[in-house]
Length: 535
Image 1 (spheres, rainbow, N blue to C red):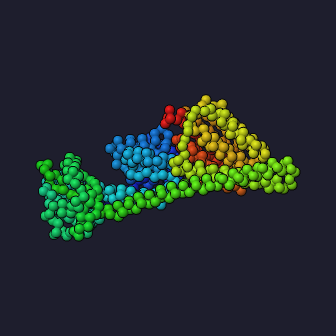
Image 2: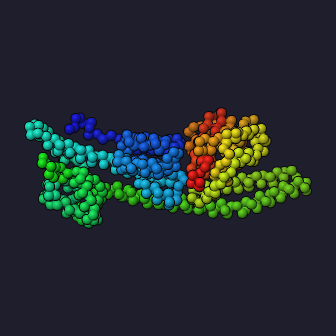
Image 3: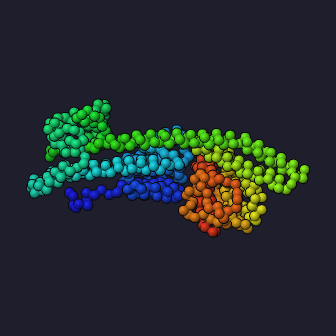
């Protein structure tokens, strides 16, 4: 029984974001403020599963790569629980872009598989579709609950039923006549005995034209006999059925509907009536098709971009190598033949600029390979401490020219690391270059390696200018840089951190940036010490 008007107001739909990176959670939460939905977050798979058992979520945005249990395992566990098996899941990933992982995502029940960087408009459109679908389902359940409650009340003892009959009839009549969804009541022989105004509006049939007829008059022919057999078996077993099917209007037009059927039994247990409630979901299906087309267009654009970057990078290398080679010859000849000092300076400037451009081209090529899924990892076992010392030596000369000291702490490092050595070396060099660039003269840059359980953790800390907390998330996107007004001129085009993040993600590791403006920055990256996929 309804106790107050507030019971008629449906609560806001809830959405869960699952990601082990706080920056990703914050970014997605800010983006989803544009949608009328209550957003909740979880930083691990276990936390997400607990929340799903205690909340009715309209949608879960689930990161694939997470520690402890990954997104695929979370999805499988959700599908194994009756309470969570029907929650729609959209996978988000920055790493697993191949068809194998995509099929695996859909195989564990995902409704979509979105690759990062995320197209905000596409994601918002998809979220709105599932939120609207959840609200529609909630409204259908509410109406079914009201009708079931009314039926239960009618089954009470005769005296009580007589006293409340007027109120129940009035309530049922209000719901029946004012509902925006089509309601159809059939007798035990499946003959239509009543329809509401919304039914007539959606189907095109008037009450007189449909009453006394079997609902199969609205059949589209798109569902086979097995579909209806399974529907009736479930209906008689559970007393209710919900699902999507295609109907036909009076004018012959075929359209999709979301249908809920509840079976009503009489006092002796025999079937008395069937009540069907359905809504026209043509617009929702159209939106789904448009979303799919948009996703395919976005994927093709991303592939074209990566192909373009790779081609341009290769074309740049040949003239750049010639520039670097001839500028080095000019500098050598300048030393032996007594060139004017400004000519030697010109040659050095040409060489430095060419080297800068070559490193930027290399970063572009690496990033395009990673985004296209063509970066092939070659993992092997190597000692991490000597690699750290080697990378520090490469940056030592630049650091010493401005009085910066590079400190190394490898006492707690694991004996060996099983990973792609080239990728780890490139990550270290990029982080050290950034640290030296943004550290004032006389400062300190420290590299520390720790064995933290199954992970090898590498921290690069500096006493530099620091980063504002609001800038941290965007610095891991390509071509984004911190305020360089206080930094020394240096090589780089805003790709270093993006490349590092992508290389760490390929190893199923993680990356974190902690910084205080005016005091310094610590960038932490972690790699699995013994990579399970290759061991």
